[in-house]
Image (tube, rainbow, N blue to C red; front, side):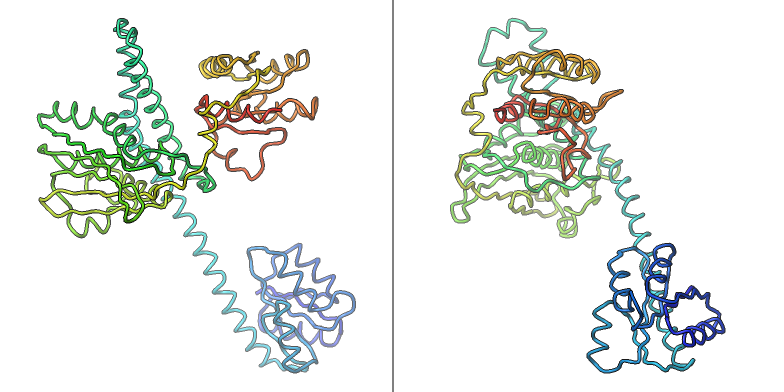
Length: 505
């Protein structure tokens, strides 16, 4: 074992070095604390034997520096001293020493202390290897889970796209339907809802490589309305697909006014659609699907229930169904649906119960606390926050998002100038004046972050820089990229743009 000696007394230093070499150790000898500290910084030192009293940097301060260094590999420290007594022993331990030997010492005593040090260092190495192995397994499991979830997301994403593709194709082909404004608005609302749910599915993948933002501000949502929307969005599953497979699902809805809860509407819709999909899968021969919403005044909560008349669950399946990767669907399931449902409900401070028995169907019962009334950001914006007309430079290399965001901005009365890359944006910025620069993050040649930094150098006080991004690493950063004032997650909504621009003075 490599051992570093810090001892200012020549005789003690020589004796200690000879004993250690006779015991088969590699020895590095230093004459004071400063020299020992330099060796420690330059090399990995498993064990240090240091005198307490030395000129300059003494043994106690050397201990403190080593413990404050924070490197992963542990250094075992033995202090040598003529000082005795409980107070000195405690002071040495507080400074970071592992052992304490009074001078003069003999070879047998030293050898016994070294055996203890070797055992401790061996355990530390084993622990480090275990942690590395565990970390590697976690990474492997995360990648496997990502692949599993991706296959599930493809299925759910296709379901989310059904109303988008279906309703848009109908409106494009049946142009006479455009005259019915109320019906068109209903279809557009379904398209917008399905689009948000599709975006939410993509965002769900991020949970495998980033931490969830627990500071998220929830908005008021109606459980009854969310259930009604979930029923409509899942209609291709419980009606069309089942009929094509030769079975019939009879739908029963009992949607009372269950009240308003604070929540993420896209996530809660995801919960209800997932539970409905599971209920349909549990009825391979067809059956009755019952969806209920009701208030529970006793617990001040809104209750959502989805009941099927299907195969039911055994007690073991009920105990394990919320475990990640547990599935009874074989290759047809990822085992992540109900685990994600459970996580979302926990984040919403709710509870989820299962009432089931083999052959008697299943009821999934979700309780969510009623909201504490108070105006939210979304309510203020929806109520019509007035954003004055602004001069906006929009930078986006993809033509489709460029067109969409440009129309969202110009539709609100803003004057919009567009650029398709960072260099073009800089040229336009230098010859014009803009209140706001809205830029994509990931662009070739010059990224949005680089563009923001350059613009802020040119005009430190103006404009406000808004970055659009779907890259989770940027959103996870503790600090925004230099020059960026506001980050908006993709896909961009009118509500998010209005909220950002409402901050412009």
